[in-house]
Length: 213
Image 1 (cartoon, rainbow, N blue to C red):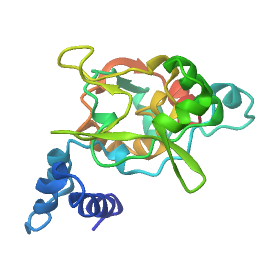
Image 2: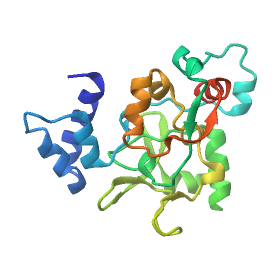
Image 3: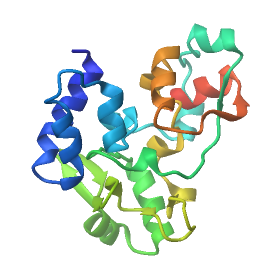
């Protein structure tokens, strides 16, 4: 069993008892021919929801960083990668995830919502250990949605009600190290994110900038 498959297995089994949305995927593991792609399709979960992601630094901090890792060789050889958000909401839903943010981002999000920072933390976040994360809510047919994912504002779409003030973790999707490290991981993410491989071309330099945030 690969690492990504193992992570998905643990997420599905641990969540099935708490959320009915995970029951079909949990049952799939009992089949001798189960696969990572089959389980993902049952959960409608992109690979990134299974990853432990550190809170990205702000763009300001990045600009002051003297050394940043360049884009992987395969991206340079391809001349960049294409991506365009389709507002499907897949990257903001699925199995229980972890959307971390910095104190600076917390202040910005509170301002966007129109509440004090203290009220924002109390109403929209949770604390796991020493880390602050955005809350999630169960959405029938989708699993666990980010508390700020809005499925009603635009018919047939799922939009972020915090878009202009969304955390760096969300802002840099799908150009994460875990996703861009190889063509295979990029294509796997594309199985769940219809925007991957579509739209404008992002040059290697821009991908490197976002990956290093």
